[in-house]
Structure formats: structure tokens, C-alpha cells
Length: 110
Length: 161
Image (cartoon, helix red, strand yellow):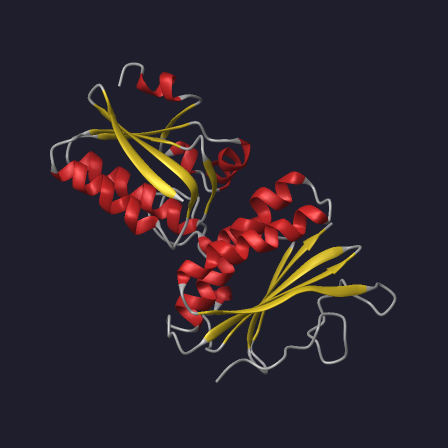
């Protein structure tokens, strides 16, 4: 499992490889918050290479979304597979985030 | 103190889950103990998932239901049950029959009262909160979730095949 942050235009794109769970959620949170502290405001988390997410991982996404908004920024999500889409629908978090089918679509108009 | 044995589902002395009976053969597919460290969750879930694939379960049960529900239960056992005390362990036992998979997660503490977690995290009041989705997901992704406190704290999750 790993998190890779790359700048694409003025958007920080985060790739989540493997799981986003209680054991590694703080690492993702810290990396995004560090970039937020440096002045970045647009974040896209791409789940194309993600296995599963537990409630702690979902909680970190909610937390990051709030913090980014508080700084006048925005967090978008992209590339959820069918399982992750189901997870977001079960928890109604699909109503909280802007979720795009692909990275390219998410970047459009960001 | 390390946890002693927990009665096997469907055997005398085991909590009655209503699914196992003497004529439904079952076997213990996995019986392991892990230290109270959340970093141990991912590898043990991967091990269980591999076992599940060999049982020819529906793909979603192996890729969503089991990994997520098991992660939640193990996380609760490590954090709430054992307070992440490295001297304490969490035991996971998976029992398989033609009808169901049963996961027993045993910690060395008192756990927390799952029945007291009654709020619905999907309501507008709670959906924006960071926490409070773990038990909800366990119930949503498993067919049955039970909690026993004697002789040890056990969370039993049953997934019908």
C-alpha cells in the first residue's frame, strides 16, 4: 500500500495503491495536510488502484474534505470500482463528495 | 493473558447462531492469533480473502463484504477490546460450512457495547462525521453480527453462502 501525490496543473492528484484502512489512514491524511499547509487547494484522490476502504479510511476522507473546504479548497474523488461505489452508496458518502468516473473527468473544470 | 479456546459454532457450549446444526458439516478453515497492532489487520485480511477465493464465493463477498467487515471487527478488537496493548492478542477463527462462513473475533477485553451504537451514520445529522460507520458496515455487509461476553468477548459475524 502506498500513496503517491503528483501535481497535474494546479490539482494535487493522490493515487491510493492498495487499501485505505486504519493502519495507514494517518499517512494519507498527513501527506494531504502537508500540501494544504504549503498552499495547495485543489485535491483529487484517484482510487483506480485501490482494493478496499474501511470506516477509518472513509472517516479520513470526510475529515480531509472538511479541512480543505475550511481553507477555501475542494476535494474530489475519482475511479471508484463497483465495490467502492457500493461502499459510498451504503454510507451515503456519495452525497457528500463529488465523485467522477475517471481522473480526466474529475479534472475537467476543477 | 492470552485467550483460551472459544466453543466452535455448532458445537455444544457454543453460542447458538441458529445456522449450524449437527447434520451440517463444518470445519475450521483458519484459527490464528495476532498482536494488538492495527498494522496486522491488512495481512490477516489478505490471508482470509485468499481462503475465500478458494471457496468459490461470489466475487463481491471476497472483495467487499469480508475484507471490510473483518477489518472493522479486528480494528474494534485491537483498539476498543485490547486498547492496543501489545501484550494482548486478538484471535480470529473462520468456520466454513456449505451454508455459511462464520468469523469469531476474540479479544482480551470487554470490547464495547455494539447494541449501544444505534445511530444511523447515513442520516443528515451524522453523514458528515468522521467516525461511527464501523458497526454499521459490519451489519450491512454480513448476514448476522452477534456479540458474546462469556467466557470471553467474542464478536461473531456470519455470512451466508
